[in-house]
Image (tube, rainbow, N blue to C red):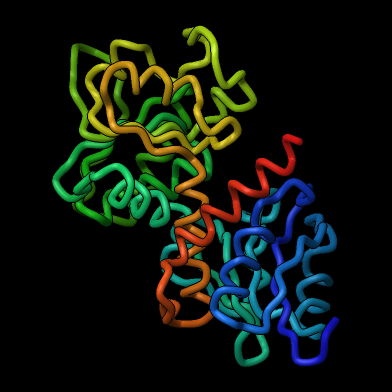
Length: 292
């Protein structure tokens, strides 16, 4: 490792497939920061030991992915209100001899909806498909940004659990489980399930590849899919045919990464080209390289 080079990493298992090194290193290069971002394989049983080692070896920023998001919090010096509420951390910074965590997934989703979908968010109604960790972070961010949220999930009990979590921590939250009773329109639809992942980028859209029925998609103005492989998921292809504005999952990945930089450095980058433009170009180059 070059002398004076600060290290950062994505940790989890598996991490070899992660786009994080490509997108974070692109911004480090553009800003002239002497940082290097790596992928470090870490399993839950060795997490405590690895966090200590990473701190000693000069790592100062971490992106945290599965299966570590929900187990790392208790090992950190502090977590902010968002990470504590969600019981999930996706980003950590090393300061004052310890690791400090946050969660940027939900706010990254909202930033992508605003910037690339034209959503106002405040005062709008979101239909959220899914009730796992990603869905929880999106729901919590949405109500904090003044949105009403309706949750739909294959397992109703998990949807109710998500709703209860948000209500406990946000007293005026307008959030409930949606049972598809009657026709309703939504300003925003977000898929936070794995439905559509790994599907063929073209061809006929099958009902089995959609997280909600097509007639529900027809009533949505902005449609986002957290899945980004493929970029043009069956949901986004179906939404385009119904003239909805679509936002792919790569934008969510990128905007949560932009927020991670703010957590690590405490401010926005001070250079001409925005972080998200640099990250997007780097991610697309990496995806294209992998397809060759």
